[in-house]
Image 1 (cartoon, helix red, strand yellow):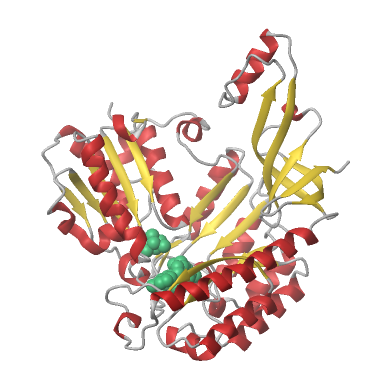
Image 2 (tube, helix red, strand yellow; image 1 turned 180 degrees about the vertical axis):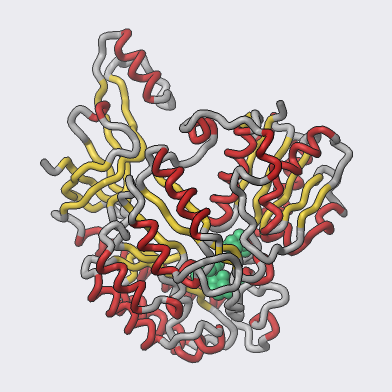
Length: 482
Ligand code: SAH
Ligand code: SF4
Ligand code: F3S
C-alpha cells in the first residue's frame, strides 16, 4: 500500500479537511510517513494573504528537491484559484482539488496510485454541501477499522474534534478572497452533522467545535434541510458525552438574540467566543462591508456578557486597510480595550486579486501598516497578560491533553520517549517518575500546566477540577482543586 504525507497551511477548516483526508487514507490501508519517504504528498493551501500563497509555491520546489519521485496533490484555496495552471511548471503535481473537490481526494489518490500517468483535477463548486460520509459510493468497498484505530494512526489531537457544518461564504467582505476560493455558502444537513458529532463522542472525545467560515449563518442558504443555527446548537447540546462545545467563526452581524440566549441556557457552550471585529472605525467597517458599526458590535458584546458574565472574547483585526487614517486606527485600539479582547489574530491588510479592496486607490504603505500592527500587538499583549493575571485564584476545569514526564532514573537521557516507554523503562529500573506534569485547556481556552499527584493515573481526555495558582506570560499554572 502507498505511503503519504500531509502539509497544511491556513485556517482550522483546512486543518480539519487534512485530518479527514489522512484518516480516510489510513482507513484505506495507506501509511502516513515523513515527506522524504512518501509516495504521495498532500498539500492543503491557503490564499487569504499573499504570504501563505508564496509558501505553497516554494514548498513545491522543496519537494522536487527532497523527494522527486513523489506524486503531489494540491488542495484548498490556492488550488481553487490557480486550478490546472499549477501543472504548468510542476510536473510532480498529479492532483488538483478545489474546495469542494476535497471530498473526492481518496478516490482520486487511489486512481493515481493505480495509474501514475494520470493527472486529475476537481475544481467545480457543488450546489450542496459536499458530504464526506462513508456512504460515498467509493467507501462501500473499504473495510472499516475498529473504532479508535483511526486517531491513533493519524497525527493530531485526540481529545478535541472539529465538525464542519458548512462550506463557503456569501459575505464578500471587501478585502477577502474566501468567497471566491470557497464558493457560496452551503449548509450541511443536520442529520449528517449530528451523526458525525455522535461518532466522535462515542470514541470518547468530549470537546467539539462546530466549524464554518461564517458559522452562525448556518441554515441561511438553500442547500439541504438546514434549520436555524440556534436549533442546531440545542440539538448538538443534547448529545450524550458532550462536555464542551465551541463555534468558529461566528460573524457579529449574524449573532441573533436566540443564539445569545443559547449561551445563557446551554452550559455546555464554552464561555469563550472568537468574534472578528476587523476594524474599530465606522468608516473602515463600512468600506470593508462588514454590516455593523462599532456601536452595534459593543451592543452585541454587552448582550453576550449579560447572558454569560464569565465570557472571554478574542478577535481578528486588520490594520492598514485602504484609506485607514491614524484616527481610524486609534478607534481600533479603543475598541480592543472596550471589548477587552483576551487575544487576537492581527494582520496587515494584504491585496488579494479580484477583491473589491484590491481596486481601491487609497492604499496605505507597508511601513505604516507594520507600525500600526506593532502598536496593536503591544496593546494586545497588555490585555492578554492582564486577563491571565485575573485568572489567579479562579476555579476551573481542565481538559488534559498531554503528559510530560521525566524519569528519575538518570541514565534515561532521551526526553522524547513516549510516556509508555518511559513507564516501562522506569519499571525495569525500579525507578519513579518525577516532574510529571499535564498540559491542557481550561473552559476559556487558556493553556494550563498542572502538577498532579499520581499523574500517571490520568489519561488524555480526562477533565479535572483545577485551581489556578500562577499566571505566566502566555499560560497558567494550576493545581488539583480537591
Ligand atoms: N470567515 C472568518 C475568517 C476569514 S479569514 C471571518 O469572517 O471572520 C481569517 C482572517 O484573515 C479574517 O478574519 C481577517 O482578519 C484576515 N484577512 C482576510 N483577508 C485578509 C486580507 N486581504 N488582508 C489581511 N487580512 C485578511
Ligand atoms: Fe471573508 Fe468576510 Fe466571509 Fe469572513 S465573512 S470569510 S472575512 S468574506
Ligand atoms: Fe485560507 Fe481559504 Fe481558509 S483562504 S483562511 S484556507 S478559507
